[in-house]
Image 1 (cartoon, rainbow, N blue to C red):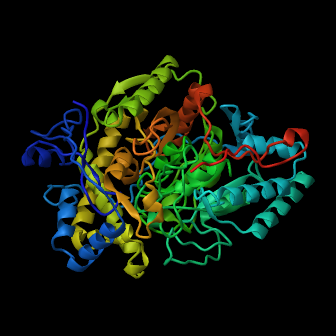
Image 2 (tube, one colour):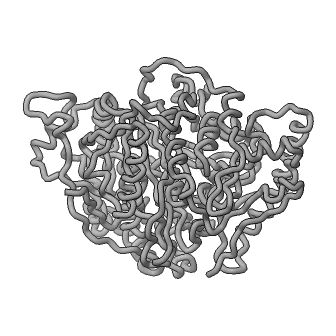
Image 3 (cartoon, rainbow, N blue to C red):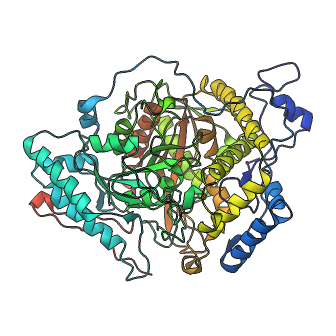
Length: 635
């Protein structure tokens, strides 16, 4: 039978979608012992019976305020304990886990070293010009900017166009501002542009990215902006860029500002009563996803070809999927966390969101690499893009699918993802059924881990300074979770890594939908309410496929594969993007990027344009630059 979910009310997006096994306690305990033994299920046998869904309601306004205060004042009694139990947060407590705990899921590279991509390699990746044409319009790529500058287009003109587009996108005259970019300093952007223009004029560009607009999630230190992590209470004035942002700046990137995010990343809608709710460029009545929703919305709207996000619980992949983009969650330890606010350090990593597979590869290659101040990055292999151009033939590539899990999404999503896999088979790929054991164990381990780490990272800030949904989640974490839960989660992590080693001995990647639903509708009353908004059902559906990569440190990519029905609470005639996710073994981002490129090639002309799309290079072929291509947003 198809996998199902148990979605239960609780105080955040990170512990919702429950897979309950009907095995006896002894059978479950046996399955968690390290390695096969007499009476223990094998990898093939250790698979859950997934339970049917239970209903859960959204909460906003006065009911949300009352719920928050009750949980904060009653502490470990009543509602908070029920929320934790219903969310299965205590699931690990009675598990007989004998594995040694793993805190950072750093796995030694076992392959041969490849050559670095180098500047010539990056220019080859960016070589195709003309962007990606969608419905008569265009997603501008890094290659487009390279060619425009080679024709004599001024970086300063492009910077002016970016600033004009940001201002236009945030114009609230119609009551529906995009709010993708929430901080942008005009003089800083122009100063960067002037320096880049001088390098272009002198023929001394820093890289293929020199002068190309890039946005950064407000979780990463980026001069000259404060780091607020989507809050009104966290205010960090950095003295330098985060390491991965410094690498982009050293490559000449034109940093256009800070992108909106869900407050402290504690849900996946990007509904934020403090910074404002970012909107989806495909349909501004829908959420862009989160927590890197501003980064995804900025790319989808054409404000930049690449944006930087962070992913601790799908926060790159979910918004990229909702906004019809490519998003890469790299291997843990691949991109430095120096200068990132430590929300959930053992499960989170920064990574790129892009409109094209080539731009995703370029962003990744420039951000990756060792950092002497982040010990977790030092022993990584070279970040390469071997095979990126090989998309017509995928012979020998083995794609693992666990059918009950794969089909645990809306029918239109499953159909679109299956159709793309069928196309990859015509190119030589092989589909292999591969059970994934202990899904509920891993889901709860991820939930408990990210909850404990977020609680620790915000402990020095007055709770009253956060929005009501965030306060509710933190209050549940604080009153219900213990060090036992965190250590048991670390033991489950060890078990999961062992299981993945077995799986990746059989297949190159694991395929699932990126999300269980398309982008949710934004209830108009929610945006006006100062309290915030939580919809536990939709958050659970959004997050059901993301936790393995975060908990166990493997890389994952989401790719656009089609379009499906929108949330029926909104425009029932609309169709919104659908994403397909691939997960690979540790350090094998190159295979994921090759697959992303192949899927892009397969989707081809079926890709659609967002309703809001700015063309920063409009008219440059005729020597005139102007912002163009954004349709009017109608309330």
